[in-house]
Image: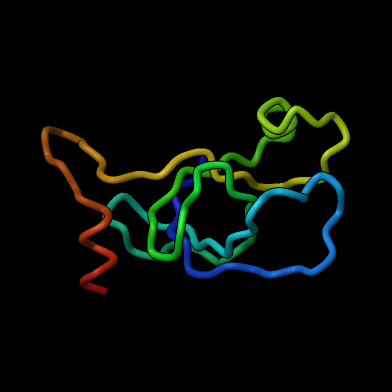
Length: 102
């Protein structure tokens, strides 16, 4: 799983069948402090995320096909949740706030 920030949306007038009815998001990986830590990529959205949201992404084919209920779907990355905060070692990090400050 990958923790990432939604940095944009991708609009396509024509989509392959497996992408129909899904919003396509541009996301960029972040570390546990909400700082960018990798290159951006696209992911289909199942969590109704928007620009600025911190999201949880899966990139494992069988899991994606199971969630989408599509054995032939050509999807590399799928947003499966919106992350509000992370709690580690008793410390809570609000990932919505870290985006607003950057």
